[in-house]
Length: 171
Image 1 (cartoon, helix red, strand yellow):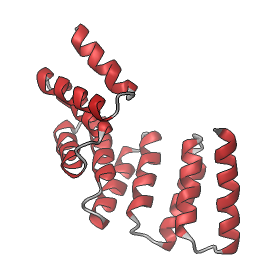
Image 2 (cartoon, one colour; image 1 turned 180 degrees about the vertical axis):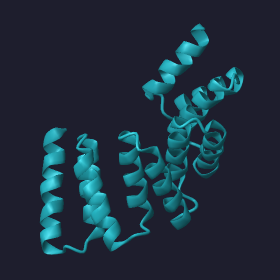
Image 3 (tube, one colour; image 1 turned 90 degrees about the horizontal axis):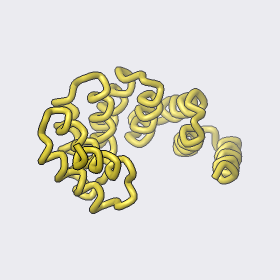
Image 4 (tube, helix red, strand yellow; image 1 turned 180 degrees about the horizontal axis):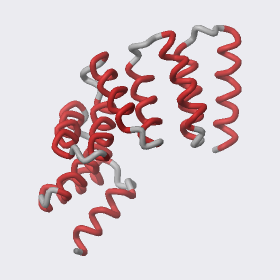
């Protein structure tokens, strides 16, 4: 997998030598670095993309994910909110905003965003799993079990949901 990311990085860099104003190439290059755990390089490239197109929802969402990985939740929340202003029907940004909010203890708001993500993409296994985690934290075990099962219905290999459901059922 590392070799594929390396090849992709080389291709995006080549594209940027040809057209330095290609914000999508900067975003994609950032995504390659993000997936390699090279967060500083990812964030730098996302910022480059946003200098060219400041309201691109995909780049804003990707930057928010990188900031979440660095536990910079306030910045991540601002990115996800900006992504949703640019594209209100963006389920990934809704779910990711929920994750960042949940990390800073704003569980009620997080649950609202998980539910919004699910209203836009009912088959989003990650959003079901995240909502289930939040529900479990609120003592709503039956509803949490339902959403863990929904997550597994849509992605039977989502190990987080498998683990979480097993833990709840064993408890």
